[in-house]
Length: 116
Length: 111
Image 1 (cartoon, helix red, strand yellow):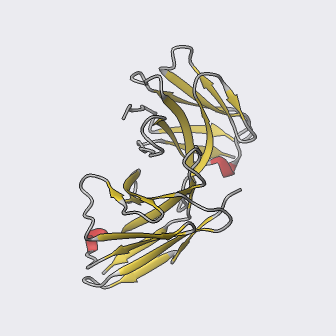
Image 2 (tube, rainbow over the protein chains, first blue to last red):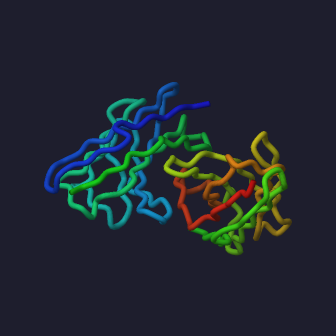
């Protein structure tokens, strides 16, 4: 099966600082990666779609200047939460697809962000 | 996006079959029915998907109603490791590969 990793698995940061979360496809090349956010007891909410070499497409209501996404290679996408605030505390999950024609998204294990 | 409706929670006994229902009365002809599940504190994982015909794989079976307005995920023998939130998702083949997660069904498996 295809493996997607995320780093770090959890992070605690102070309010006002920035945090970078990495998402890697370990054994396949991912043409598209997605970033989701999940608050406790809630479902996943899509934040943005990231295609290698191009700008990410953000969902309505997601601030692109606050959540910076970089998909620099076919195996790595990063999400940077800038000037984090306590309300940004959440479970951030990425997923990756092998190719545009594929149907299955492979999800990472998630990164739990706590902003104090 | 076409929406899905699932029960909030279900209980099952270990080693018994589980039928997880999903209603999608506004499904369109290009919508695929996908099922993912999310174990506690983990990312979701793909379970199965289908368009019109019933589907089987090593994890589960997917039974799709003839009018496609509902579907049922079947776990043939539930184990404790199957306790998770199961999401029924419609993916429009004409709109890319985005998945819109609804509330899902929390499956509890009793020993």
